[in-house]
Amino acid sequence: MHGNYFIHTYGCQMNLHESEKVAGVLNSLGYAATADEEKADIIVFNTCCIRDTAEKRALGNIGVTKRLKKQNKNLIIVVLGCMTQQDGVAETIRQKYPYVDIILGTRNIDSLKDALKEKLEDGKKTLFNSFNDDYLVKDEKLPIFRDSFPNAWVNIIYGCNNFCTYCIVPYVRGREISRKQCDVIDEVKKCVDDGFKEITLLGQNVNSYGNDLSDGTSFASLLEQIDKIEGKFRVRFMTSHPKDLTQDVVDIIAGSDKICNNIHLPVQAGSDKVLKDMNRKYTREKYISLVEMIKNKIPNAGITTDIMVGFPTETDEDFLQTVDLVKQCRFSNAFTFVYSPRKGTLAAKMPQLEYSIKQARIMELIKLQNSITKELSNGYKGKTYEILVEDYQPKLDGYICGRTDCGRLVSFKGDKSLIGEFVNVEIQSAKSASLFGKIV
Ligand code: SAH
Ligand code: SF4
Ligand code: F3S
Image (cartoon, rainbow, N blue to C red):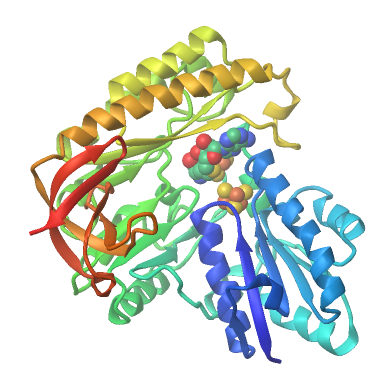
């Protein structure tokens, strides 16, 4: 087999990493990546269905390939990822987009090789989206073509058991399965040996790591082991569920040079009633005291969050509680979303709020967080931080950028050859969320 491939990736970091596995499989078969979709022999869509917008974007782009397929009769279209795992969606894609050749579920990347073979040899189409029991065994063997230097993604737990009432993830990603601690450690060591300078541990809820293992390992013990690995590198992780983030994990972060002082802690809402309806299993008070505990133990911690507005039972009063929580917690950044009903989830069956209400709330929330981010940004001025150079600044010629330990992005003048190096940067100016500085 030979030719070029192009991968469209939608959704979260988990999907970004899984596209690296898809690329690994395709490279191992003799294909090469191309930046020009029109020249591809295989086009892959790694889909997301967390919100309606993500789904629409993927379907729109899949539709476009009908034209490409007319130009190139041998073009192979592959659709995989979360969308294909929703009730009935794979079958609908099969009917409405008959030019799609291969459809695989979230736990079937290992089947890509055979599916391609069958397509090339016999013209056979594949639709396979079962939650294999031996998923982990097969997944461990997949080659990975890492594409986010100096960062390396490392999965530690797959799936989710939480069933927040708005969320589709448990349905499309299945129940939690933790990788063995030794497999994770080996992979981290290999990434560090290969020159990666930042390791990001991935899971829908990293704090559940180990719950399904019988060897007593936990997320805290995994972090301790990773912290002991020799070399100069940083460790980040996402996502932490507030109901499961424990003090021992915070203590380990506080005592470690490698594990970044950066915690992504999605709150979703500030009202106890809405949190209960969302099945989040913590209260507003518990969340706020968790944030205070983190700030006490790690004074320069960067705490980021996800917030949703427009959940079906959210009243104006409830929304004001979210606003108030945001003012109290002063997050270094917040990812804000408008609730989008997901078929098959509990919340989708409740009476829904009007679009205009949701829109007004999200605008207010974004405005508030922007003003907080701006105020916090000013506090960085004049200070010097160690930055891991990640990339060049596409918008500013001659500039490169990277992050502080606490996760803030800083841009400064420098050469692309510094990507992957640690440099000290003095912050000189702040423009809302963007910090600018110079190497010292
Ligand atoms: N496992 C992670 C996040 C998964 S999805 C966690 O538990 O936090 C990322 C974010 O998308 C969520 O934090 C939530 O804010 C948002 N999200 C999930 N389902 C959504 C929906 N139906 N509509 C709008 N936003 C949603
Ligand atoms: Fe979705 Fe909740 Fe699981 Fe996160 S913890 S993936 S929001 S069900
Ligand atoms: Fe989307 Fe699936 Fe991630 S639904 S957010 S790609 S787990």
